[in-house]
Length: 535
Image (cartoon, rainbow, N blue to C red; front, side, top):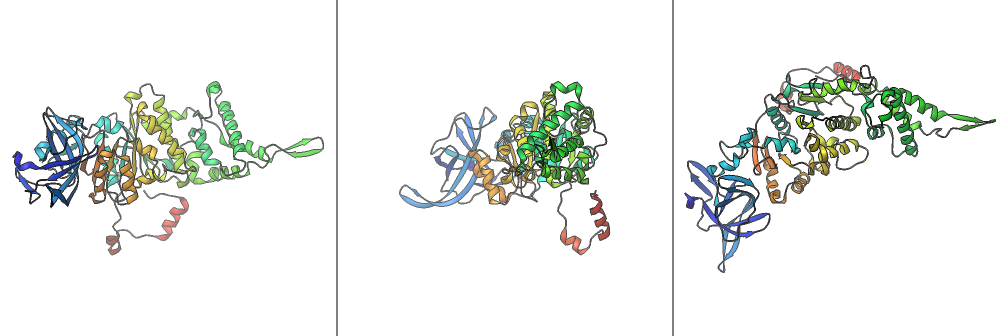
């Protein structure tokens, strides 16, 4: 049996890859062992290198046939490149290698039985996300604590099965009574996947009061940094907000700062700004313009645009949240009245696109600040899921910076306070590198764009960079899983969610042949006028 699994010897070694020269007697890469067919050198399969009492495990990343010179003669030989992924010692698998092999050591390919100990290393957690590709009856088990507690990136092109993968992973833990998952859902895809078992909040119909915004978020929403009077607007707005907060909350006046989440009246602030913008001072018989005359004209236009726009009514036309204590009710809706909502879907599909960034910043910061001040944070971990993250967590740009800054802070500090992130995106190259670099676990699905592929290569450890070459060829729902939570990099067919999210493609051809419902233009226009979302 050992002879049947022998494939060749090591010809070169470096810190990232080993090169294996296959035995010249191998005429066929196909092997039959224990009733199963194996293919030597198949991308994603594994090789074994015995070294005394331990066995090194490597993953095949490249197979080629080249002319090599052996004993002064040129001959064609198969060559395999493999990344070292772990060590089997005393029957237990350990990540990484402490001892590297040397040239001329024999190499063997691994069958299913050889890999059982590695695949099952985290089986005790009982958390499996799918089937290991290329290996029958082998489940991909993860260390659930390291997976959810160390930030996750789920990346893949449109149509790769990304939404289904996210829904499947979250469904596996949503059954626990104290699970806390909050999904910022841009397109309202996930309500269907958790219908009847989640807390669904439509942000467009739900009051999210302006007075919860910190000053950076206020500044981004109302002040144009290109305005020549921007510095004056910032200074005066800051003073007026603090004064209003203290005036409306006299019992907390001594402790209030510009970012304290307490109620203030924005209409009063607008009136004062209007007065200052048009103020004229009479000195003797001379009428002069006030110190801020005309300096708030553009600011007031931007402010009025938001206050009078019905799309922003959920922020500025408050009916319920007009006192500071209302923050308790708001947090109860998001986190559950008993402090545990399992899964909360924050449906942002009705939010105006131009303030999605500000809303994401506000919601993420609110949740982070809650656990920052929570004395029981270690018993109340929260997972924040950022769907379509490239839309509001850009790699560059200052005009939409508040969400990026907030999530970058969570990515750097969140784990200390029991707040973890799941970043979901189809364009990883457009997402803040600071955020993605803080992720310790990557679920990378099919990526067809070369820029995205190269970006992923920079993010994963050098040892596994060559494995990303398989990204364009992954099947729908299949992912390359790399990170601290998994024993070794694995190609995994993610379990299909039940129920599935509302993310399936529209069947153009079938609907062109015969549609189920007819479109009435007048009805659509009426909805358009009324801004009524399609349920």
